Image (tube, rainbow over the protein chains, first blue to last red):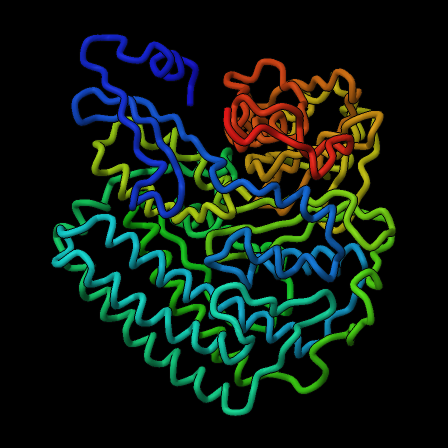
Length: 386
Length: 148
């Protein structure tokens, strides 16, 4: 928030027509606990102050008190909608600094989990976003319920893979904890084939919907310069015409083996971000098929069972590892002192950076557009507040 | 940007960056922190602001900032040390708008004061919180009043 706007907030009802409106912390469109203090002139927002931190658990301090073996299951609680990639970010940095090898099969399984997770996460995003924009989309909850239905099928797959539906504990330093059970690959193929068809249905419902286009086109434009300066990532920066994807910029976990496109749109508005995510559905499904076809045999972890949680030690050193989560770059910066616990762990959450663009793009829009813009950012507050 | 970034840094700041893959780590005195960020943005084309954070080394705090040039794949990790009893560091908000929230977070959790920051308030913790939790002298079980 710029200094002038800050003054307005502090003055309160200063000026003749200005009104301060609180949106949140308990607002259905906030997708979590987020409070936006909007300064309004009539229906138009002139300044925004974003208040976050309601979900703060000080993950970074917590990481200093838990061993490298204990923490991955906590890591999934940062971005709980995309738990697979959060865990992956943490174990990646432990493996990088600790120079731990990961077997090829485990790398493929990680890609498989990450891409299915991306589809599940995008389902939740699309559903809730359309729900936010409400009745204008022909029956409000329709798209939401359809998307939840598809997300459930992926959660079923994860349940039979890991035993859990939301926070998986699938990754561990050195590999994965579980291998695919018998018959799972066929079920997975069937599921993604269904979802691929359903994505077309969603598009048919939305692309020709005049209300949807009015609510999203030209709304919430983020210039490429602003996108870079803020450090946006994921579908947001790709919707602003910059082809930045960690899977391409710095391939990890054998992503270089797979053939996929990085969708980019140049309109930079809410609709462009929607288009990027819809194409990502298909690209992720394409990657899942390639993994299932090429899953190499072999062990799933280079670090089979330890007797106590303190037995995995990482030598003195530091490093930053990043992965492409559903919302963008999720990274961890680790400083290890040779012990069984990190000396310092920094989470770089995609949602935190993505959300910080709001005070720059919302002013000038109507109140109703705030909901559309916030939904198109797709923040997950577990990751914003950590 | 033209030329080799490592050579450019060596030439302009008389310090040799540590190369690790794509990443160049540059250790700077705190007086040149802002100057270097401007140089990275302008001359190295690092328009992408990735993150900023700190590490508590007990007698001093290390402030780290990662910026990138996405087209050329250049990654710069800037690092500087500030004394733990009076941690002051120039704010990068005039160069990268994304530094705003990251510096607020760093102030909130480490107590680093970013000079010339337009809006240096706590961001994750309540405004009346006492202490900075990521400092090593802040015990995990530090008591705090439940209602204020």
